[in-house]
Amino acid sequence: MSNQSTELAIIEQLGSNGMEKTAAQQLLDAYGVPFTEAGKLIEQGRQIVVQDESDTDNMALARKTRLELRSQRIAIEKKHDELKADSLAYGKAVDLVQRVALEQIKPVEEHLQLQEKFAEVQQEKRRQETINKRTAELAKYVDDVSVYNYGDMGDDAFALLIDQVRDAKEKQIAAEKEAADKAEQERREREEADKLARVKAEAELAAERERNQKKLERISSLSRLGFSFVGSDGYKYDELQVTEQFINDASDEEYAARVKSLDEVITERKELQKQAAEQEAARVKKIEEQAAADRAAAEKAAAEKKAADDAAAAKAKAEADAAEAAAAAPDKEKLLQYVEQIGSVEFGEVTTEKGKAVEARIAKHLATSLQAYRDLIAKEL
Image 1 (cartoon, rainbow, N blue to C red):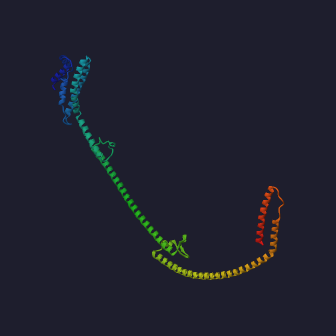
Image 2 (cartoon, rainbow, N blue to C red; image 1 turned 90 degrees about the horizontal axis):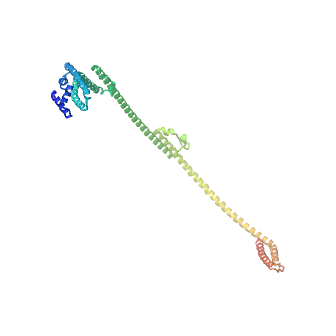
Image 3 (cartoon, one colour; image 1 turned 30 degrees about the vertical axis):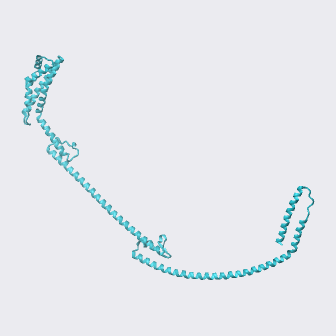
């Protein structure tokens, strides 16, 4: 925008705010921006563009122009403060002029500062790009890159740092792999050892079961022969003995031979015992038969003797009873006569009723007693 068009635009905007054109022109003249010196600096600043880091002339010109434009901006700000104090309407106009002027100046001022600091900006940009690149590279080998001040390192120093952390990382990975391989090997060895231990334990258990089964079979064979367990002495049958150690340690051939020998001895012994038992049974039977015959004869003789004795005793008793009866006859008659005499005694004359009642009771009792006496005499005599 040219100085003239900018001036007309400001005058028109001031007119819309109630300011006459003459006053507006005077206000612009008082500011002198952006159509006097400041306007020239603005146009000049817009044209300054630094092409590369070697363009030091434009960098210097940008600085010089920025400083001059800065002086104009400061002057405008001071003029703003002076003019605004007159009145509110004038203050608004002053604000408007300042805003328009600053809007024109500040972008160019900032642009010139960028041009002035172009080399520094580029250097910082390259530094940041280097930091980002180095951060990505370093993060491949370390978890926390903040512990290293690698932003300002030279390339050789950073290359050395990368070599160091790469070596450390590779060593760490190698150590972790070695530890993992070792742990895996130890795990496999433990599994193999456990497997061998299980196989061994199962084999030992199977062998133990086989030994126990064989022992049970051997003990059963002894039991069938009649052997009994007698504690620490093993198993016995009469004076025959088989020890626990022989049962546990003897080979199948040794044990079979021993059992066969014992079977033969016990079988022969049982046969002899059977014969002796049969002979003893025959002897006992003969003795029992003779004893039965003797008992029968004795019983017969005893019976005959008893019968004779009973007959003699009966005869003697009959004779004694007859003699006794004959001897007792006078006494029996005497006693019966005495009883009859008692019964024939008469009571005296009783006159009262009570006396007669007592007399009747005595007579009845006496009659019962006399009959009892008669029965006693008949029974005893």
